[in-house]
Image 1 (spheres, chains in turn cyan, green):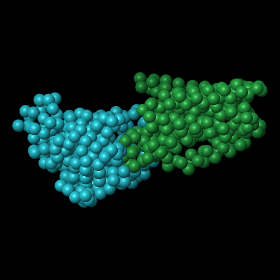
Image 2 (image 1 turned 90 degrees about the vertical axis):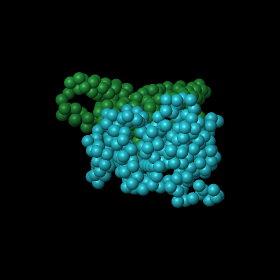
Image 3 (image 1 turned 180 degrees about the vertical axis):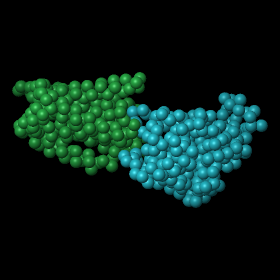
Image 4 (image 1 turned 45 degrees about the vertical axis):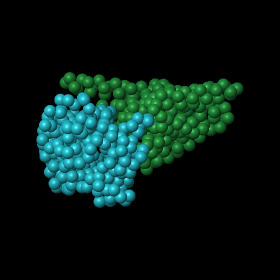
Length: 253
Length: 277
């Protein structure tokens, strides 16, 4: 771990003593994290643990009250958008905004909403969709996509350019057209191909245990950070989830 | 009246300078309002159009009281109220409709006070309440033309405003400065309201800033096509409304809004029917 004053520029993400309060409510307290590229990091914690807020800090959408964070050696606000792929938590889109699949996918490359799509861009979009066996979604309205299809489209949006960090905020579990094991296979392959840092926000302990190389366990405070079996010990899980997770206890023995 | 007759009478009508100015005004404001209406409809800001239109009353009344050309004072009121609404929305926990309600009432109340201070006849205020296309002067056309040019230069903003409208977090993660862009949108909306004021009037203006995009939304699968269709609807309905108002000797602003409403209802019904068909 980095004990010196200088933050290590080579790490993909490094944060020290991150604290975030919103309207005087503590959201995150003393989060410390240092992780290089070519890893699969799971951020685990119960609902309301501040996982999504930590992602927002990494993306530069929120500034922590105290502490330091460097992403790819820079302040998150200065990141180049193409370096980070972001698959947001599944949510309903505003139906007042008519949008097509190819526009959403292409926005991952143009970083603007496309007014017009040229033939090269069409090709890039089809290419990205085909990597997820989803070419048939081209031309569809995003409002008619199922949850699983939308997840694929968002992944295609992230895959349309090579990323150094890929972040997935709670990809919905048990999704229709998207076999879950498929998803983790795709993410593991992506990491192998690109040597990117893959970050998965999840409350699924099984997933964190079996697919990730590193786990950050939080519940507002940082409970543990390190390799999956040690981080997800009985005691740590109990500290993070309290008594609300009794049914999960047995499954890890 | 057959088509040829209608055409020739239309051309005849345009021999009158005031009618020619009216036609140009309709094309310009029909286009600029319907372009911006896409963002208004999509961001649920239709109340903002109404609020800004009413806050213009403050500027109109002040100009009448001071006996000066209203355009500058009206713009000042509209821009101030628009910026105040944007600031309040971004910096307090209040919803936008709350801050609109506060600031537009404030500006309207000021307008009523100014009107009461004026000792002479205040009849010309009704021009601004209901609109009168015959009062459009050449200078109004230059301002509207200049503003259309500005919107053209700002066209790259379309991709940023629409992205932030689609998903604010995604846009922000792509380093779009959504707050600054919001202020710019509020600024151009404030000026657009002022430019449409003489033709539509305070009361009808909100509809003019909503109906074209609302109609286009129902027949569009992408925001690009919604924008193009909205502008087409905005221009055609304004010109059509102007023509009908001339032929049947009706108030132009109200006729334009009725044409747009008819179009909206027609599209809504035909979409409903085609779903069963």
